[in-house]
Length: 455
Image (cartoon, rainbow, N blue to C red; front, side):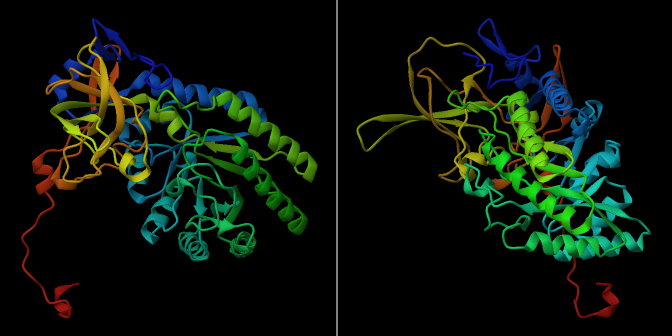
C-alpha cells in the first residue's frame, strides 16, 4: 500500500508493480542495476515550490532565503534544479562548493557552513563571492578576515550561535545543546565575545545570526524557543551598537515521514508558528522584524528519492523467545544507508516488482556487508513469500543516503537516476570496480628529509 506521506508524489502501482515517475521498477533495475537511487524530479521541484511559495506568502517583506542543504544530497543536476526553483544553497565543504560552481549556481545565493573550514575552502568561497560565510570559531573569524583583506574584499559573515535549546532528536543530530562542536554559546558569553571579535575587522561585515538545533524535529516549539533567544541577542546588539543586525537564520531540521507512525509538520504550520513568534518577540524587544531565512533540509529532498534493491538470500532464524524472524538480505546496506546503524533510524519498504497476497511475517532487512549492524530495517512485516530476485523499494532515502555512502568492503556506491514522465536519466553514475582501484598507486619511496624531494 502506497502511503502518500512517505512516497514520492508519482509513486503508484500498475498491474501490481511499483512505478515511479512513470517508470516501472523492473525496467529501472534492468537498465541501471541495483542498488540504485531513484529521484522523482517532479516531487523535488514541487517541494521546492511549496516551501518557497509558503515562505514568501507567510513572511512577506521579511522573507529572506530558503536554503537547500547540500549535505542532504547534492549533484550538479540537483544544484541546477535548486537554482531553477529560485531558492538558495547551503554548502559546508570545498567539495560541495565545487559542485555549486560546476552547476554555475549564483555565488550570492550561497552560504558557506562548517566548523573547521580550511584556508583553501575559505579562499574559494570568497573568490566565488558567496553571499555569507557562517563563522563558527574565533580562529575562523580571524582567518576569514585575513583572507578577505588579502583579496581586498569585505566579506559578509553570519555568526553561528548556540541557543542551548534541546530538540527532541537523536544525540548525534542534536546540535544546539551546550556540549557540541557547533556554534558560540549564548549562555556562556562566547557568542558576545565572537561578535566583538568579528566587528573589529574592517574586512568583515556581520550581517546576522544563525542557529541549527538538530534534525528530524516534529515540533515547532524548539524553533520558537531558539528564535526568542537569538532575538534577545540581537536586541543586546542594538542596545550596545545603536544599530540592528539584519538577518536571522533559524536553521532547519524539519522532520519527514519515514514510517506510518511519523507525523511531520506541514510547511505552512511550521512557518506560521515561527513567524508569529518572531513578530511578537521583535515587537516586545523594540526590534524591526529581521530578514528571516530557513533551511528546510531533508524536507525538500528526503521524500523525493527511493532506493531500489534486489533480494539475494532469505534466512529463517529461531529467536530465544521461541519466535522466528526472516532475514532478507539485499545487495546494498550500510554502504548506501548508514542511518539505521548510526542513528537507529527507521524506514518502510515494499516489494516493488509484484504484489503479494501472502501472509505478512516479521522480517529484518539487512545488507551484504560483514557487520552484524548492517541493517536497513530492524523489523518490518513483509509478505512471507518474499524470495531471491524480488525487488525491494525503500522510500524517503533522498536525504543522507547517497551523500553518506561509503565503499566499505570495497562495494561500489550506487548511482542516482532522475525519473520524469516515463523517462529516466543518470545524474550520478554508479561506481564500478575500476573506480575503486583508480586511487591505488605504486610509488617509489622518497626520503621526507630530502629537500630535493620537493616535499
